[in-house]
Length: 327
Image 1 (cartoon, rainbow, N blue to C red):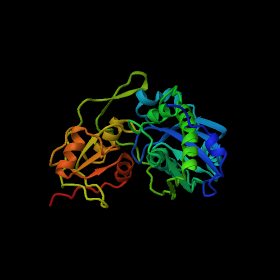
Image 2 (cartoon, one colour):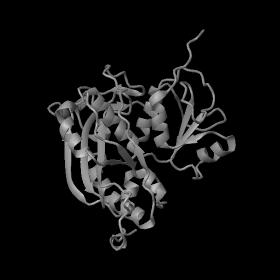
Image 3 (cartoon, rainbow, N blue to C red):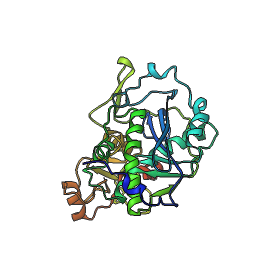
Image 4 (cartoon, helix red, strand yellow):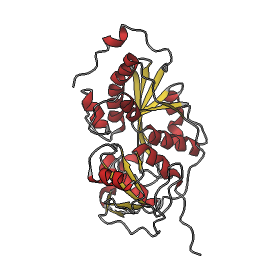
């Protein structure tokens, strides 16, 4: 696969409806829950045509366990001397101000950023976001999955340090530019979404991680192989347009942009049953490729099991309805 020849778009007028600037963002976090915190953040500022203007990176002290160290590599010792989020909030805001926030699975990055600003009693200066997963779908890119590494490989971008915020942001910026030019060339409307400030956040001490056991060596912790059994009965299938209910059986299929184990652990923490296979009792299938011929997607079509993609599932996890109390 060769990179897009930008001469195809420089010879024609640039779409006037396109934004005038972008902030390509990546954040690493302690996890996926509402009380999880940002531990590093990177921003690449781009002009209207996707050219890099500058970049910025910072560590952030989360004032708590750093979470999946085996993924992001940031231990408590490394983060201890890092600034707190309120100390970097102003500079972070300056990097975002007046620009469209661009991220891979942008709803996740936006929610984490918005909650950090809410905790700091400030508002992130972001009005719109653009998810590069959604853009790749709009462009019908022939990707094997929706991971950042696949998008990067498609455009010949070399990923040097996965799950490091600065390198992930660089990779995304380099892949976004040819995507933006392809959209401009083909007259594709950018999938821009409104960013509303969040007031929902938590300062409560983090709850024990379901499915994790502590490891006191080098400040790390690792996943145990067996999760506790979901304590809630299965309330049935998910109904589109309604919230998830505790006890629902959720199955996952295919690649995800967020580490699969983290998604599964977040589902378990919310009171959902993570199913390893799909049956008539499965409430919901989460997949970014519903047209694939995996055993789970084939069974889902056969059983009529509801299907949502990763971004929609992440959104649904924000408001899982508690199981009714025993009467």
